[in-house]
Amino acid sequence: MIAPHPLKLPFLQHPQEGDLRFPYNLDSRGTTTHSHICSSPALSHLSCCSALDYSRVRRSSPSAIGGVYVGPVVEAEKALKPLREFGPPAADIYQRMPYSAAQSMADFLWSKGFYSYWKSGFLKSFSDGAIDTILDFYAKTPSPRTVIVVEHDGDGAFDRVPASATAFGHRNWQYNLVVTTVWVSAADTEANIQWTREFWEAMKPFFADAAYVNYLGEATDESVRTAYGNKYERLAALKAKYDPTNFFCHNQNIKPNPATTSIGA
Image (cartoon, rainbow, N blue to C red; front, side):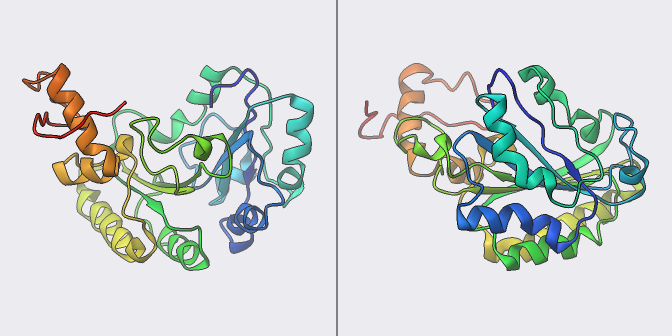
């Protein structure tokens, strides 16, 4: 996402199948995939959105696609034209902006002071079954502040990096589902957590055995190993070399393991 001129994609009006499937169908045919684009379709009621003064958006339950284009603006306009013309969108906020603005643009969706319960995992594919399940559960969410995001990271520079080059794992999976359940009152905690867990259970057939380490809701030994995959032992060896006492032991901790055979290059 580091780019001189990120472009934010438009909000779409309704969470209907056509809206959500638009990027999925075109990507699968390879007609809109571009190595300079990363995009994330999202479902949100936007009931908390004071940042956008669009009455049509704030009265509905829109789907949105946020994304960043890295490259010349003229080429960005060409690459994103099919999506921009689709719908048309209820609110179009394409614009040049600094990286810091792109990073903070959706902060209003996850405001401080609320309760939250997140789950995330890589999808084997953005299939019809996965889409139908996402839409079915989104229609039943107990909180209008809940946001469901499908990050599309593949088909570009992201998955051209060799698997062994970085600690980050699972570059082979192109889509990552993030369920960010957010609610206001403690009295609604049980209902929201239960909805999230039921949603997650229904999505299990579509998940790869992989997760993004920054989205781990519960950073257990098992979940951290899942996030790093077959790189975990190499990282444990590095930890044993540079932090043998596990002084840095918080967050998604990798425990030192001096018994690991090789650190590697």
